Amino acid sequence: MNILVAGLGLIGASVAKALKKYTSHHVMGWNRTESVCIKALQDGAVDEIGTLDELIPKADITIINFYPDAIIPFIMDNKDKFKVDSIVTDSCGIKTKICRLLEKEKFNFTYIGAHPMAGREVSGYDNSLADLFSNASFICTPTNAPKAKIDTLVEVAKEMGFARTVVTTPEHHDEMIAFTSQIAHVLACSYVLSPLAPQHTGFSAGSYRDVSRVARINGEMWSKLFIDNKEPLINEIDDLVNNLLKFRTAIKEEDRAELESLMAQANKIKEEIG
Image (cartoon, rainbow, N blue to C red):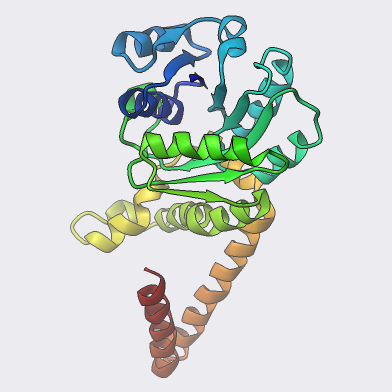
């Protein structure tokens, strides 16, 4: 198949490189900055570059890798260019807002929301990796897509090296992402905002590193993701605050039994779920 990767930043370029390394598909690349396209072609990350007018009509699958606010405009602006009966998907980390708006449109192609669950603390083409998705999950959030199209997209993900594929609703995706990803970034950022953080050297080890790692964050992108997923994320923040308050109260009141109980509950859950 001809696969167009639109947007060659960290995720998009990693998608292109994975397709080139692990599949036999013809990979086309496009990026707003032409120099990135040229570099991707020189690196062998893609087989072909060109204008959107040249590439979109040839693509059996188009994978869009933009910030959330740019995905719907891109699809609507190019809706008459996409190949008839092709698949158009994206890699955005929130799905409900995008999927539920696009399902109302009548297209001659199939849109399927998707989310490759992988990333790094750095961004941009130069940090992309062909093996970024090894052992990662690929989540599909179709709304009115035919099963055959979903199966095609899932199969391509498997070819790229994803270890798990999940098909679910946009809403369930977003509430789970609020818990597994977004709340962790909120926690890490809140943690390093402590006035003691600059003094950690010499006092920190694994615990500091593990909790603070994802505070290395692209604020422009993640602020949009947080706001677009505000209800599920606020629910997770409320749960986290309530649990922190339980610990605070027990510590303040020197209630060792309650502290042991809270930690025993957490330990049991962690042992059960991994």
